[in-house]
Structure formats: structure tokens, C-alpha cells
Image 1 (cartoon, helix red, strand yellow):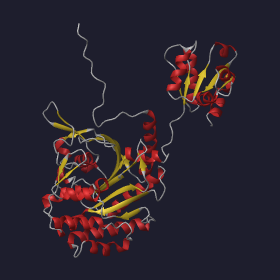
Image 2 (cartoon, one colour; image 1 turned 120 degrees about the vertical axis):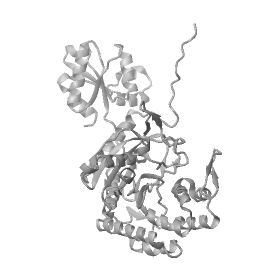
Image 3 (cartoon, helix red, strand yellow; image 1 turned 45 degrees about the vertical axis):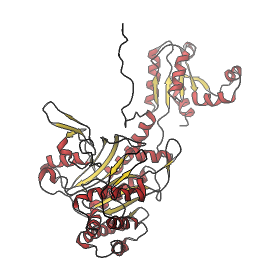
Image 4 (cartoon, helix red, strand yellow; image 1 turned 90 degrees about the vertical axis):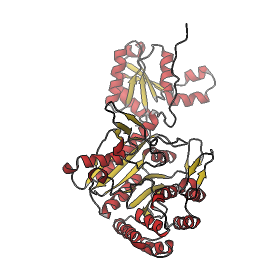
Length: 486
């Protein structure tokens, strides 16, 4: 007889499993951000994971792989469906489909997973969560300014202090003006912008190579470049190099004239006016350059941005799980995309939005100890009477604790091992002796673990009572509350 064929238990590349602690920390963070967004008047929206492929368009971050950038399948009606790669393209479809019934402007937030069929790498997954907020139907710079102020409030609400983050703003019209000044062919502009957008990850040398013929990474993979002429590469890098981080808002126009090395041109001037109008609004509300500032190197890789673009970046080093400092990049980003809804309707509908990278922000908060902990678990061991164990667990839950009744084997040792593996703080024991005396035993597993480290003999351990208490049955909740520190 041949052995049965069994599948190998393995994860697909670029995907990961997540445990209870991370999920609980993420849920806490999302609840805080959700509260900030709703306080600004934004309302929730949910769209499906799948969209018709043509509805997503060709705005993927990696346009060199348009057929591989998304996960797709053909439905039974021969229509191609794709997993959404962001939350903005589905929003554009939703607005186009429901345009007549929506208030204008339409303001919504959405949180959910997105999928990208890209090459995975360290910290780069094919499935991740985004938290978006968008305003559709307003071409006023006030809509952009509001998103910038709101994301600052959200970052501070989850625990970041002023000085630990900065939201940087640029404008695609300024970039377009720079490309016009360098006389770069319109067919190459998308490649140029995506190359500049990788500055924080690849550095100046890597970006310069992408502006040229090609770039070879450490693994030997070759990425085709924009194939610019040497003087064009020099002009683009000069503009990007001239970072305006320390420039006051009222000096941005003078600085840009220097960066452009001459006449800015009509497109660039439009960009300057939009940046200055946003600056007037945010500075009038107390948001100065310690929180929001202009930076000419901010690009945003997606092709659908048409005006202001922005990124929230951290001002402190972040370490990975191996304790190594990493190039972290942005924790949020977005911008204005006035042409996206027009793909469906033919009518331009102004829109602006910002997206928080949930996993990135959670990693940053974890490195600062700002994620909070899941409620301590209490395991009620099942002795002679399972029904009584469930009653004890229910009583603890009604008092606000996190408690479960054990439902496995009846062996006492196995139950304690289970509670230990679950990381339980307390184990509740109600055996025959306790029940006969209207008592209950509470075993402090955390204290017991610490005690065991300093005790050499079993007799000494058994004689130490700090790790457990037997109390009157009616004193269960009060004793648990005291042992857990309130």
C-alpha cells in the first residue's frame, strides 16, 4: 500500500501568519485612529476585496509588470476579477457608481487588507492593511490641509510625540514643471517619478542609476531605467537634492526659483500657489514646520496623483526583530487625484486622500512600547464539575476580566501546562475540597514563574505560598482584581 499524499504545511511567499498579541495591538491602534477620523466627520465605508480588473486601471506601483502586479482570476462569466491593490481605486468606482446619491463633498474612511503581486522581501509582504481617509468632490486646498492636520492628530493620539514624526508635502505640478524644464519626454516621466520615489530606500546612487539605463540590485536582478541623457539626470538630481526641509513657508517660492535654475514655468507656478494656500490654512491652525513641512523630494509612486502629495515619516530610528536599525520609510502617504473618477464617468471629480500603512505604523509604535497589551488571561481549570467551571469563568467575564474555562483533558498537570502555554496570568482551581469549604484557589502563574527562578528545591517551592491564595468563594472577583493590580 502506498502512503497517502499529504500537502506540505507551508506559507505562500510574501504572506504571513499573525498571533493574538499583534492582532490585539493593531485593533487598539485602529480604534484610536478611527475615533480621530470620526471626530473630523468622516464616515466608514467598506468595499469588496475583488473588483473587476478594468476598474482598477493601470496605476500599480510597478507598471513594468502590469499583468503581474495584481492577483487575478476569471469568473464563470469570463470576466476578469482582481484583488484590490489599494483602497483608492475601489473608492473611485464606488463614487462613480453612486455619484447622484452622495453628498458633495463625500468624506469616508476605510480600513482593510490589500494585495500586490510583487516581489516579496524583508518587511515587504504581498498582503497588508491600509487605513484610508478621502474627500471626494472638493478642489479646495482646504480639503488637502484638513487631511494633513487630521493625520497629525491621529499619530499623536496613538502615542507619538511632536518631534517624533513629520508630515512632508510636495506638489506633482512642481515635479511636472521640473520635468518640463529638463525637456524629458512625456513617455518617460512615470519612470522618472517612480525612480525619485525610491530615494529613501535606494539612496542617491540607486536613483541616479534608475534614471539612467538600468540598475542591478544586490541579488543580481536588473531593473530597466528611464534612459535619460546625462544632463537630464543632473538636472533632476539637482532638484531632488535641494531638500527644502528647513525652508520657511513664506520662502518656498524664492527657494524653488533657485532649485529650478531659472524660470519655473506655468505648471510649476500653479504648484507653488497650491502649496502656499495649504500652508496658510495649516499654519493658521497652529501646525508649524515642526509637524508639517515642504520637501521637494516627496514624489509618491502612483501615477494618478495630480497635485499636492504628502508623506508622514518618523524622526527616530526603528529596529527590526533582530535588533537592527532599518530604513523605515513612510508610515502614511497620499495626495490629490482629480482624474481617477473620470475614468468611469468622463467627468472630472476632484479628490484627495491619505493612507496609513497599518503594519508599518504598528511596528514603529511597538519599538516605542506604545501598542498596549491584551487583557491578562485567566484560565479556570475544570475539576469534577465542568458546569461550575463555566459559571466561574462567566462571573469573571461579567466583572470585566478575560477568562476561559478549560475544555481539554481532565489531567491537572495538563491543564496547568495549557494555562502556561497560553500565557495566562492566573489559574482558578475549584476542587472538591474547595467546594466543600465554599472556597476557591487562585494561582498566580506569573508570580509562580518568577518564584521558581529563585527556588532550588521542590520542598521550598511547595512551601512558598506567595504564588497562590485560597479565599472564600464570594471573594473571587475582589482577589483577582487585587492580584492583577486593579
